[in-house]
Length: 201
Image 1: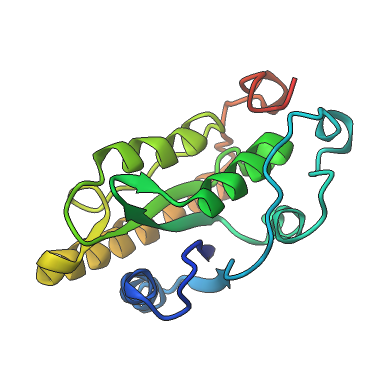
Image 2 (image 1 turned 90 degrees about the vertical axis):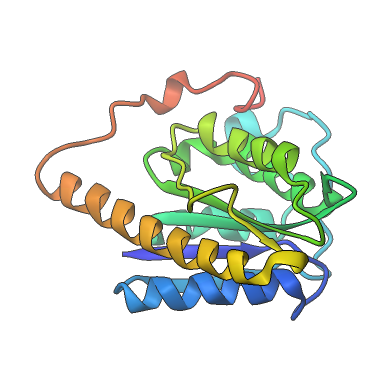
């Protein structure tokens, strides 16, 4: 079992990295392999609704979006980490997810998804809903910790507990899905019937 963790923060070793490391350690303790990707200074071209991905099933603008889509078969779960500033998610994260899920969301059907949010204040409700919408539109089971998967500067103790609980829940569900597949239980979602907007039509 393997989980891909994508850090969309512009800071390589900032607060979001700290939160994701706590979750990462918990996943490994539970026997889950982890691959880390930091978007960093990667230039992600915003989705232009050009429609080229309808037939290509990959983004017209080559780069980290297509690189991650190409390796989708190698992981069972996806965790996306994002900074929340003034109650909103950074542009790079939104551009990344728009392109990734609009161009190839059928590749994520049945995979387990979760978000990790980093904020100075606990004002992440809207950001939490926004990011989970990408998973919901792709027939992905969404994993929570005990709250909104938030690592808040003012409540580091609570944030640490949240990240550890998220790692436990993620590990458990990824394993459950894996065991289900071994026993012939497949996800009933039909990729061709996914939301037409998300498929770029």
